[in-house]
Length: 178
Image 1: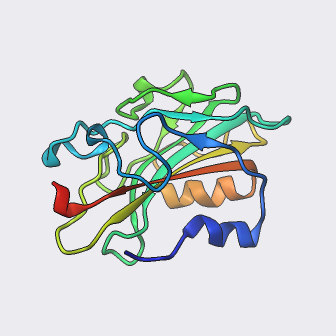
Image 2: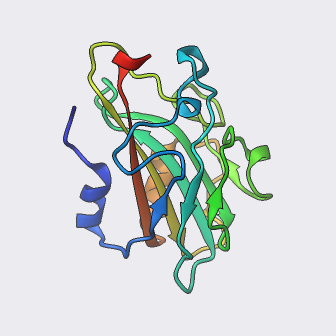
């Protein structure tokens, strides 16, 4: 397993207060539930259920994403990225992550498979245990100046400058298990 934590690196550039992020489906650092794996690996391509603490004062919207930095790509693998979620939202049930499964007004960006939804874990054999970083950012703007066709990396750039608080929850997937 790689040790690089992209969100720790971001915090060095611009520290932000923590937002507590948990899941009733897995413990921090623990294995993702089967439903959060890809359908091709026995899962359902559904996000795990996520819960987060109330965002700080001044929050006007939220952004959420899932990144596997351990994918053998040199740049990681984006599984999901959504933004313009309502500021008062404090959780999501297991959803497919498409705009229609999220509160009205939310926008979803294409993942690495070019699908505007969540795509489940499917680490390739021989690449070790992968980490899946689920991240929720409380933002100081009602909407980001993006149309949703950009990449999740572009979302990361824009949210970096508007983040008031960030929650990070890491789940794992072992290719030897599926």
